[in-house]
Length: 498
Image 1 (tube, rainbow, N blue to C red):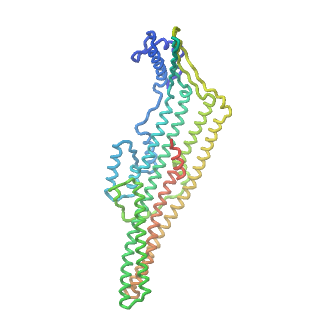
Image 2: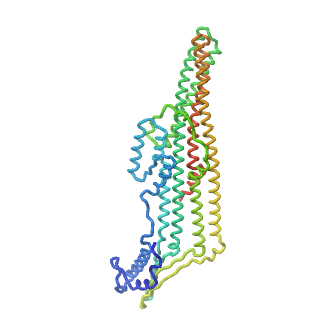
Image 3: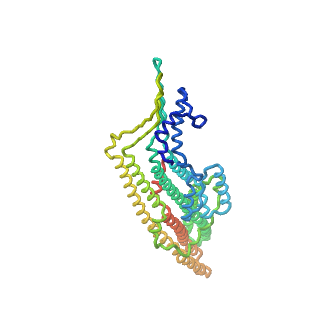
């Protein structure tokens, strides 16, 4: 902003004698026309404001602050995001989605689609534009006021014109801009945290959907085996080689297998629909394909050394809480600055009466702080600041606890999945192979062989669930290290509300 003292009282007196024609100053005398004098006063005020504003106010950026969010997400291992601000952006997103869906969906593909096509996330991106608009608005002074009064009676006419400019708003622009800039930075962190949260939700939904689909395939195989066992039991009964009890056992197993398949299929549908909602898909796009099974367990996992320090340095809710405290501290300074002078306005005024010369001068308006001596305004700001400090401390404590809990769950899930992979399933297979040899040697019956197969069902299903839980735990650990807790997400949404 230019120096606000650039226009002096002497300059105002000269400007009183001048008028503006075609946007240029001229020293011609002011015509004795009411409408022209009113326009001159208005142009004078606008001229003063124009001098004060030259080169000093912010404008909206082309990206609305979104590029900062994209960089924050990329730094934390996230996929690229896209804000659909125009119809062309929406068409580009749909083209990308359809290209990705032409082949079986991977977990990274699911995250990619969610970050560009999730409608709730697109609504969250708009918070960036709102915050930036508040910043730009704060960099401009409040609109000046123009008053005009006209009194006429008894052959006399009295006209008053005044142009008022609120000086306090001009003086506090740097402070207000600083506050809104901090709020924009905090909003960017909160939006980035929401992006990482949606990415984590997409990963969880993907792993659950693939695991549910894998369970369906296995349970369908079990049902086929149970069907064969029940049919064989019926033939054995007809041949007189079996009793009703043995037949009932086989038919019970077959009926239970049918129920488990139906339950598994419904679970798969439920999980798939959750994934579809997160990806923002509809119509033919919902017919995408998934891999037949989950990815294999990795040979090693991440170490837990220094995870708390890394979480405090990288977690977005911790950074946002720090930004909020800084913004509140700046707001407290602004409150103390404007504690007594709540409104200070200065303006140019003219008055003309019938038969009397034109009178010119200025007018100052001050709001008297007669009821502000209690200090309630400053006390409130101080309480809000301390509230922010304690909430920031709470976020830091929660972050350290959550990352410890997430790593413990991650480590336990890995150990369990490895136990099923390296011990349980190999032992089950060894038992099955031994029973097959005994059956081939006519040492056991086919029903004993089928009974052993039934015992393997629970082990295989538990193995699928253990592998699924590991990938879910890895997703949760990544979010605990870089994103934020669900409590912060709720607080961030409340903060966004204009």
